[in-house]
Length: 287
Image 1: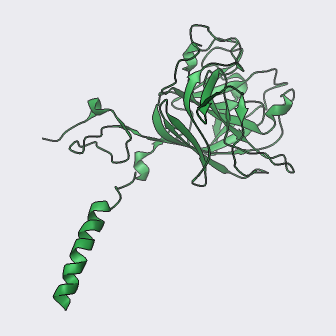
Image 2 (image 1 turned 120 degrees about the vertical axis):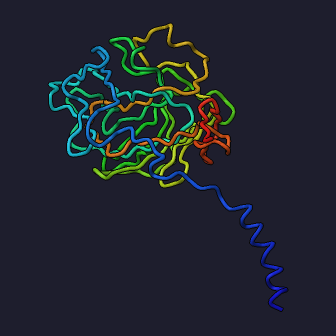
Image 3 (image 1 turned 90 degrees about the vertical axis):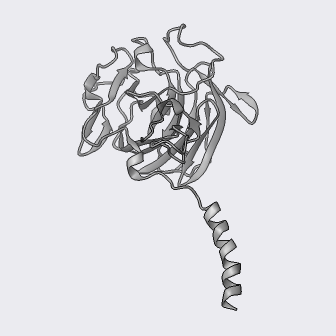
């Protein structure tokens, strides 16, 4: 009887072993784009100023938090800014934890109340002209509620870009997600999973709230750009990541990224089972 039971259990155990999920990433596999101490690895670009000039100390780190502040501004004067990370990414999972604080800078546009963004698949900061307002990019729009009205976050906006939605080219500038509204100064965690020029998903609490594909250069909503950079119709397979300054104070306590492109040869020492895009030129092997 015991022998029969064991005989039945062994094939089932073998089946479970074969279908066991691959090990997921460890905390150390995530790249901490924001180190919690300073702006190492980041470069500001504010409209009207040269790359690297942090007018008014707009971007700063205080008490372990990356802050976008306007206490040295008299008026906003359309000084839209972006803080660019040094590396370019294509296939990745990005996590941003943010919250809005205080009052909007005087002179900020009404639509920018409790409004910021994480720009992905963007142009490098060095290719932006001095008076350019936004990088050509895909904006994961980060919004806060006004205390009474519904207002989703992790929306899509498209400065100088378009996407494909439901098999059709989507050319409207912004598209709301299906997230709930986050009022007050609570922290909100937004994730973005980008697959090169394929699918991009916006995720909150583990659930997709928006998805689209084929990000590409095109459309309007960006000014004073270099025409040599804005080549409409070109698919965006990756690009810069930047955080936005749009006139309302905002804080970021976490900005981290899991690279989904790398060595996919199981025999290599640096193989990772969660990679979805092969970059086997970087594989390393032990002798």
